[in-house]
Length: 349
Ligand SMILES: NC(=O)C1=CN([C@@H]2O[C@H](COP(=O)(O)OP(=O)(O)OC[C@H]3O[C@@H](n4cnc5c(N)ncnc54)[C@H](OP(=O)(O)O)[C@@H]3O)[C@@H](O)[C@H]2O)C=CC1
Ligand SMILES: CC(=O)N[C@@H](CCC(=O)OP(=O)(O)O)C(=O)O
Image (cartoon, rainbow, N blue to C red; front, side, top):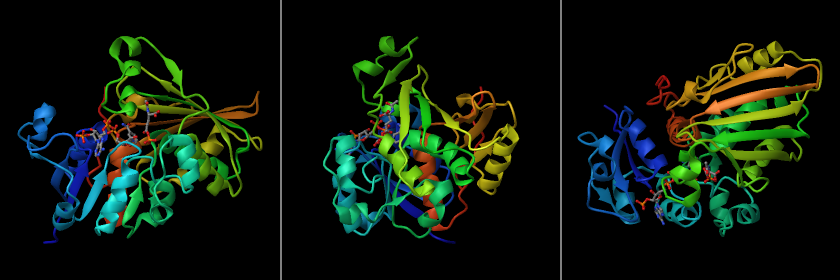
């Protein structure tokens, strides 16, 4: 029998971390060896998360790089941006494989990172080692990699929705507008006034307009795919729901294309990629239809009158936008079927 891959989760008490536990608990090739917290240790993780009672009730460990290097093969870092920049290099230097869920290693240019994230960047030698893990686009790079930088939640929904149309020359990539909305869990578990129930409930608000830290990540990948610099208009909104992202994208058509042309191009592009589902004409995706799953569902509406297409892409921000894609990346890294441990239907209703 082959040995299981032993993993530790740093940031296990956050939304991304606890979602990693939900999936990894059932993963046939993985053993969760250590659940780590920087603020609490020695108590069962189930004390803070009673839904884990009797199933995952390991004691929380502190951060001990030497112990991790002795006991585990790979570390998931589900830590806030600015934390991974310092932690991940220590893990890499200790010989550990790493999958980082934060934004700290997604941008190839440290100066860009500093400008948008307002933290000092990681050193170039570590930025250069990071493999950007947008699985359906760069999955081949993940095979055999030892350090993966997991994409952002908004970029995942947006890029999966735009890239096939750009690659096939269906849309003009020079004036794309992206209108994106997220459930509140996207902001993590930490409390703050903006996410306080009376501020959020029955409210719908735009935030970080033209300043969102995912703008350079989206532009970096679109520029790579288009072969020339691409800029986008990107506006994020907070929706009073727990999970889910909808990214609605508007782009000029480069010819007289129909909904069916988009459907055919996308189905071919994502052939054999089981986590992207293309909707038939007029059936646009909703966040509930991917809830708690690793799917990204995409639908189209060509408008002949304006010469534009509207592309609608939905994901669950904590799954395909974070923990699910991180596990998909683990599967690709290790040469396992990418669906391993992730093959669940969405929770509906
Ligand atoms: N939520 C989402 O939908 C998505 C999140 N992400 C990214 O994933 C990462 C985790 O997000 P999320 O789980 O939502 O965030 P949370 O705020 O819910 O959790 C982050 C966890 O990090 C731990 N932490 C805080 N400071 C430190 C530190 N100095 N050293 C080690 N651990 C620390 C905390 O746990 P403790 O105090 O126990 O150590 C905390 O529970 C973030 O970078 C986020 O931007 C990416 C895509 C989507
Ligand atoms: C709803 C909400 O607040 N979402 C967060 C997503 C943050 C995130 O995932 O940050 P990194 O991927 O850059 O680390 C935001 O918009 O900032």
